Length: 394
Image 1: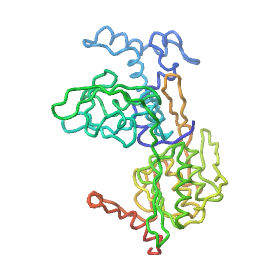
Image 2: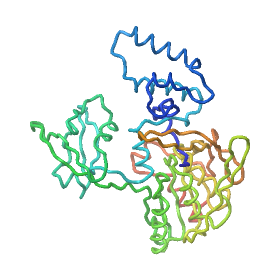
Image 3: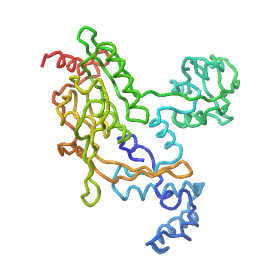
Image 4: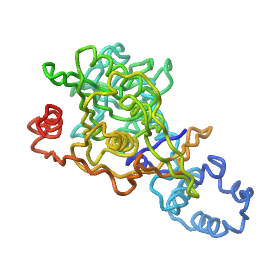
């Protein structure tokens, strides 16, 4: 799988060594089975450190797998690339769910209240609601495993999610004096759309589409959006890529091809100077000739920078907002049987006109900021400027 991701990947604590040596071998097995081009002596210091810790540490030692993961973090860091990481099975599941656009779940949002309790907010007509769970219920255990204040919300979500059709038993409390009781919920497919759209101004035939990420279903969702907007008379578009941290390279090419009839989407430079061109895909789209503005900000990264740069280079759109993040590298994702994955930076990319993005970002054509006061008041000066530009108020 080829894809580009932004800050979220950096935040995932990796386990590279576990992958390099077969995804979970213990230290003793590593010692016995060095890889090609390596000898056991190469790891002598590592074994000495481990043996000393095992013999001298006063507290409870971590399990062997945790030790491998800890060593893996150090190995990953030695490559000095924030995007070359090994992702453990649990966070990798979240990553896959995000890219796929769906997961097996119960249909409830989770968050901590001021007391640190995990509060449920149900989604309508989903398994949690049908099982009798209500807004404000407090989750205290999942399949008998207590929910502690030290657990992150993501940790708990990992316990609740699972295969579609499987059952999960939730222990909850309701009300200030309610005694805990159990509810069995059958997981179903929960879709997480990546595109939202609407008509901004019917009289001016102006539409809006926001793409949150570039996943497996994003191109089809955008096709539906553009088709519906066209049917409502839209012939001008604001494409909102603010906060879009990236996704699949193929999705970025597909999305760009909804707005470009020909040309190139990006240039990819591999190790050794080899260069690969990604052409626009021939497709039928109502938006090929629509005037456009693309909204960008510091959260616009990776695949969304590919799209933004390609549309601007082709003269199809201007960029309005703030400078983008500046991630111009591509990761190959290698999946392993235990559910973990190795993300390896294998290339860097340029816009079709060879503008560098990595560590530089894209400067908007029209710089417009947005403040906390704007957000609190429900104002969006960036969107307002995009609308004005499309109406000829430049």
